[in-house]
Length: 84
Image (cartoon, rainbow, N blue to C red; front, side, top):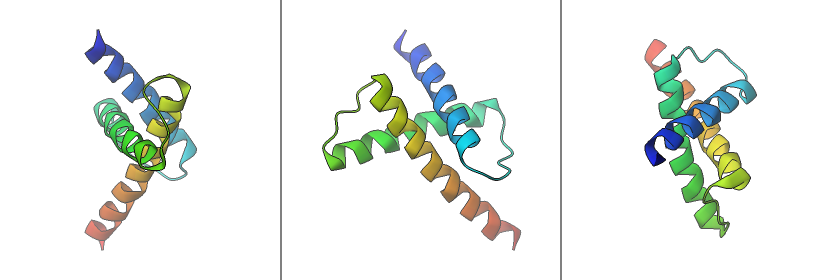
């Protein structure tokens, strides 16, 4: 059940991050889920650095979205360099 929950939370965090961050981020469902899962890992790391317990719940979702937004900015920077 934990793996399915991780996929669902990853999808929600990825969708929220893509909705919050302006711009055209052309990626499919799988990449959105991966974005959310990796964003959750990054968000948990950031929460740990500042001393906040973000293990699940609303706080975990917020930090997952923050991590996913950071990853979207990095993704956009990488893709813009490839096009130039």
